[in-house]
Image (tube, rainbow, N blue to C red):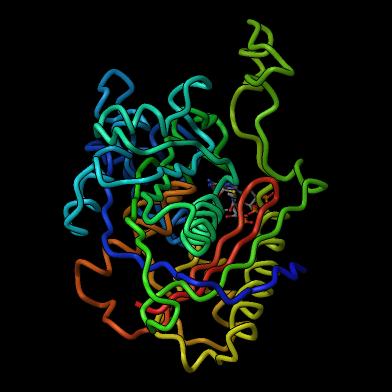
Length: 340
Ligand code: ACO
C-alpha cells in the first residue's frame, strides 16, 4: 500500500474547467454482434455497456491528439483561459498518435499553447489520476501556476476485433481539466492523492509488440501481437480489490467516511466492477457516477469525461467531496480526493 506523505504546502490546486469529446461513430452491441460471436444481452449483462464511440483514423480531428485538443478547448473555455495562459500540459494516454513526438506536443501545437511545456504519461487507465496528482504537486510547490490535464485514448486502434473476450469493452474519447493554483486554506481544492504500480502483474493486460522490444513483422501482425491481450477474469478481481483499498486510503487520509462523499468517479472498465467496489465500500450505487453504458471503456479518458458530463449537468455542486478511483494496465492504481 502507498504511504505517500500528504505534506502541508504554500499553495493548493483546484479544477476550474472541464471538457470532453468523442468520435462521431457510435458502435452498438448489436452491430458488434454481427462481426463477433456475442450478443447485446451478454454484453449488457456482463459489462453494463450498450455502445461505444470509435475513431475514424483518416480524420485528424478523431486522432488521439484531435480528440484531446477539442476536450482541452472546452475545458479552457469553461475556465475562462486562453491557450497562451497555460504553463504545462500533462496528457495521460497508452495509445499515442505517434511514439515521437508525444501526443501532448501535438495538442500543444494544435492549441497554440506557446508557453506550456508538454508531456505524455502512461499509467494506462489510471493515467488521468496520475497526471492530476503530478500537476497538483507541481502547483503546490509553485513550480507551475496552472496546467491542462488530459486523459485521451484511442483503444480501438489496439483492439483485437476478433477477440470477443475483450473487444466488447473498448472505445475512444478524451476528457480534460484546467487546474489552477489556489490557497491551501480554500475548501475547494484537491486534498490528497495516492498512487501505486505493480509491474509484477504486467501479464494481465499488455501489448506484446510494437515497442522497441518486438518489431511488428508480418508474423507478429498475423498473430495480432500488436493488439491488446487481456486476462479479463483476473483483472476483474484485482480491480475490485485495489480500487476498494485505494478508496479507503483516500478516506482515511482525510478522516472522512463514505457518508461525507457525494460522488465517486471510478474508472469505467465494467459496471459490475464499479458495483462490486460500491458494495465493498458500503456506498449506495447512486453515488457512483457512470457513463460506461454509452461510452464503453476509453482508458485514461473515462474519469475526466464522467467528471465533465456531471459538471455540465450540474449533478456536481460546489462544496461536494468527490473521490476519483482507478486501476489500469501495469497494473496501476490511484485515488484522488477533491472538493468541488
Ligand atoms: N459474448 C459471449 N460470451 C462470451 C463473451 C462475449 N463477448 N466473452 C466471453 N464469453 C464467454 C466465455 O467464453 C465464457 O464461456 P465458458 O463459460 O463457456 O467458458 C463465459 O462467457 C464467461 O467468461 P468470463 O471471462 O468468465 O466472463 P466474465 O463474466 O468474467 O466477463 C469480462 C468477461 C467482461 C472481460 C470481465 O471479466 C471484465 O470486464 N474484466 C475486466 C476487464 C478490464 O477491466 N479490462 C481493462 C483493464 S485495463 C484498461 O482499462 C485499459
